[in-house]
Image 1 (cartoon, rainbow, N blue to C red):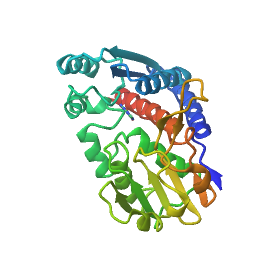
Image 2 (cartoon, protein in one colour):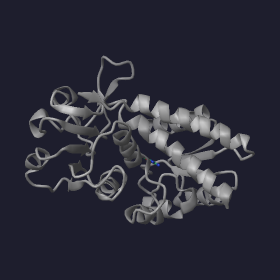
Image 3 (cartoon, helix red, strand yellow):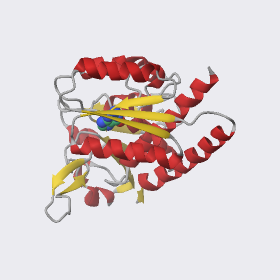
Image 4 (cartoon, helix red, strand yellow):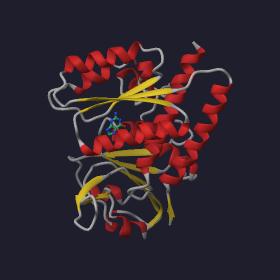
Length: 293
Ligand code: GUN
């Protein structure tokens, strides 16, 4: 069994980005600048956004964090987006999800300038991704492709089973892996809450991508020998033995599944850290594109 080490891989990528940024700046270009908007006080979201901002500093980017109260109106949020859309120093920005219930998420994502949409959530960028045109690929699917690539996991002709149909992970992952691309050319089955005989399907998988948010749902009896398992789940489960009162648990019962797997991601330290590295990659791409205009 080989651990797909997202922590180490993301550190490698960040080092590569830092070198590239130094060279870019030495050639007289601006410092890449990522901004993040967060609405409300959700603990996990704040942790993620802080990690994104900290990662910017490490690779030599500028970063701006815009914190808004959970009572912020949709109109006020749209105004903040309008400001970032035209701010010439901002190369890319994200609006951290989920948003409070009174705000229409889709309306917000559609207001982001697609050229600055480093999350790749705008319909224009989702459409380009689906057509296999150059665009920003969302951080989580992009990170999974990169992890499979760097560990030379063969996807061509393999049966990939994706669990979950979210716009952020399951849906783009299914599209990308079926495309004619370096990490792709797979036969993809997408499963979701209405799928019947799930175990029958997962038992046929060469590669499983689990993104359903149910702790330790995938058990050893659901996978075949030599499977590759990508665990996107990251749920906080109460644990009084921990200082912060919780532990992070993936969608896969790691210990038992790892015994049958050729490759598997841990939680934490698998897909999670990769998403931040890929967000930085997209921001550098946005900045470089802008400097060419
Ligand atoms: N919430 C969970 N994942 C993400 C992400 O990749 N981007 C944003 N903006 N919010 C998220």
